[in-house]
Length: 152
Image: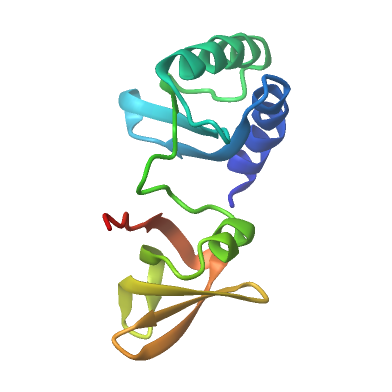
């Protein structure tokens, strides 16, 4: 996780948690004038639009006062959804047994994209089974990871 994301996590997670939600993860997508700060919130009872609005209002106030982002951006507050992104080793471990899609920042064994069964976590590596081959992917190399929803 970049130092900017760590700073945002430290600033915003306590606000989300004080409202009774979990801060599932934070993304900052820098695209010039169309940058986006996306905060994923979670709750045992699920997330409704009203929950996102409530959290968004509180976070907007904190962001206006603290001003941690120097460029213009849009704030989005969302549920992680069924194809939830995975950010932490704890989240990867909790989703062991699920199918996942992982994109790396740089190639690992000549590839950047992996889709397969999430086996779990070993030390700082995410273990994924792809086509009968087990990969240990360093978590700090992961650009994006999502659970692939099951419809049983």
